[in-house]
Length: 357
Image (cartoon, rainbow, N blue to C red):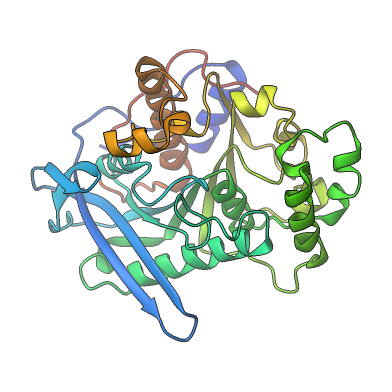
């Protein structure tokens, strides 16, 4: 008989510093892979989406230059109904940037969809430090979920009562907004006059743009999506705008992941955990940074962006990815998996990974 670890197990493990596996070990699925491209004429929106999902077909190396993926292209999904994870990349990323993580989640029984966010990606950052950066991401993720739900092949295997969002940096903030959080202008009022003039938010260019974002607050329409039940926010941006007032409407289960950059870079993110109405699960990834959490860059990209692609050693990257996979599979399995779901397997996190502070 299948056993699913209840929610209290995860939080007990978090409190005690014990790594907690989300499900008993078992046979992993293979990862299927598809790409979806849409064009919305009315909104002038072009959206390119990668989708990973459980399949029985054997994987192979797939060439999406300059990236090489390992999955079963256009394979039929396994029978059953699977929880959905929307994956939102960091500003310096694309829909390919976390392909190994996405494939691992698919192997553990999740359908994972990752759009490239127009206006906030490796090739186009015109929306950086604007409201469009966040509201646009939310719209892209909602649209992605709608497209999946209407897909003839994937729609029937989705369990839309079990939807999570995993986001990095701006994607993490968008994920929190979809989970019910808001943005509070009060947190910005004295931010750049409180000894933080050298922080990236406080350059003259960034400060002018963020001031425009602040002028749009409070938002007339909340960005919450009632379908989202769980949020994994990895190093969210705009920590100063995520005050206790902004977070008090967040109803989704939350995993907040802090990186080394958060801990030592003067970021407001280290204060977030005390602002939620319910304490989130909190984890820290020592030595992690934006580039280190992405899949290893292909050679052409590494030559173009060496600071991003070589921000950690290969050994550090392997360890960070092992930790992050364990965190996300454990969290989403605990918060989204029901007893009716197919059997999942999980890569356990390494010891001393979880903390409360």
